[in-house]
Length: 226
Length: 256
Image (tube, rainbow over all chains, first blue to last red; front, top):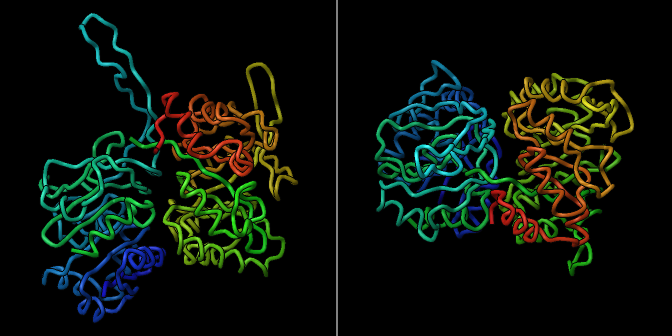
């Protein structure tokens, strides 16, 4: 049984439904004993970092989540569920995250950027520039590029998901892991950020596999089959 | 790289799609799931359901519709039309829709944007605005916001309202030109560009699409992040796939 952790942050039924479609038995729950009994755990969520930690503390879920991870249960964090694994966030200064991964959550700066559209061949050629307006939130379909790290993980969780597949993103903050070796995929939005991270039994993504059509469902299927 | 989005819009009434895919063998043309599945297969990036149900009691049917769509199609979708309370939003989000679009209620009480974005996050609050050109001189254009389905002028300036909606926590703007809506003469590029340059949140252009060049113009000259269209897709003038192929050839970054 896969437990989808409910802590009052957003609709979880599409995650549950997507898991069922790929062949899992899934249940939405906010009970500590369900989390501790689960075979696998999915930790989704949308909303603010501070609000989410408040809800997790109120429901006394922080310890069960950490315990379940420490005993090695496969754990999938999605969107806010990825960010909460880190130590702190610019969204809610002073609030401590779960701290299972080292690093911080930062806000996209956004704004109009200029970048060379054609690389200059000779130095005396005038450089041509394109302009792109990076809006916040980062909303829509963007591609995920395999990082050079975590190749063994890639073969598991990203099996049949080709490099540069499009996934659906909606977020204003991104994670910046201290240890670059945990980065599974990166995505470019004004700069490259970590859109997927893995460590031990933790798998986490910034995008929404449950909203990313076939390729997104493949990731969930891979998680179910771990 | 983030792609530009193509978004078909479907009208729903009493839980049924009334303006959806035409001339195609759908077993049940009014079924939301069948319509959504059709566009999902064609490669739509998102879907918008516009609820034109008149009575408030029948709104529950829209919630059931959202529920069915969310359980069958793994593609983001928005529901809009007649949303006026935080409870309306909660019910729709719990039913599985990803975003809600609010229009009249936001103009009447701007704090509604603030309350709902604080409660549910900006990412799911789309502010829809219907704008009509009021002043047009050689170097100056001004647009006024209308509410109640375009029936009531408000005196609000479109650019100012867009900025205010952003500052109150809107995550996205769905911008409809009333002058161009239904004309098939193209989107209002001036309006789209002005709004898109004035805010730092994504802008969806709507109203006026008649051919693929119009989509291209809105996404390039109009600087829109997404285009919404109804009739060109419903009447199969073009498929979503054709639209994307065309845009890709013209150098627009789309998801294929």
